[in-house]
Image (cartoon, rainbow, N blue to C red; front, side):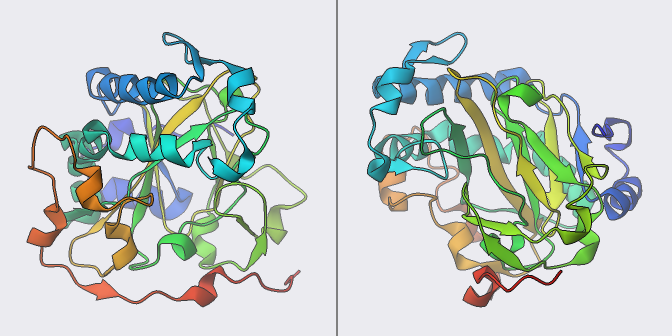
Amino acid sequence: MVFTDSTPILGDGDALRERAATEGYLFFRGLLPPEAILPVRADLLAVVKKHGWLSDEATGKLNVEALAAVPERVMRTDIGVSTVAYDDVQKQESVHRLPHHPKLLELYKTLFADEVLVHARHIIRMISPHPAIFPTPPHQDFPLIQGTQNFWTCWFPIGDCPREMGSLKVLRGSHKLGYLPLKPAKGAGAIAVQTCPWEESEDDWVEGDFALGDVLTFPAFTVHKALPSQFADRIRLSFDVRYQPLSEPVEEKSLRPHCGLTWEQVYEGWHSDELQYYWRKLPLTYSGWNPKLLQPERRIC
């Protein structure tokens, strides 16, 4: 099955919530303008080039031999590049500005019927053909994020991303099951859900080709995974951003950088302080962290 395009109901909160309650996801064609995304792509590819892995900036073609020579011990296997390179990515002001784009804020304000909190922990996936990298396994985001159960993940590629490049796939209706038990797995997060009812069928999995500006979003319990990339010399760049109603509790780690740097180190060299520590100005409530949610369980079926 392919994604249903919800662009025609973009401004209708009731229609969005009704469709989300049924499908467990919302997909929008061309929600973000290219001029908002392309500068981020340029900044990310500049980091890849800095570390000697880029052979063609226009296509994102990689120097596969140079990348493969990077020892696994220094790789962020959940991201696709080395820890040092990912620190450079997290220092990019454009990376932290794009999640606050008016088109995204308007979408979630309509969806939540509430003011919006943008989580400060933005994840950039830079999925590469390094031997240590595996496709993200089927999982739910709630155990990894926690806080309110009413947060939503926003996923979009930073460039065109056909299915052959490893776009995201969603298990339609899986959000209705609530929290699912876990098992260990290779790939980002190192966990997978026990999707027993669907192990014999792919009928409920929904996927599609993404063009620049397309956006996929889904609630905390929707099961999703990445398709394997069929390109041996390309890098897949994408955003994982979380949004929630401002009135709901947030877990403190969602307000930290997604790397080993402090915010002071991330902000070095920024041209504006407009978005620095923006969450400190908001009337937030906090929830605790439950480590048991990430513990694998014995199979239930």
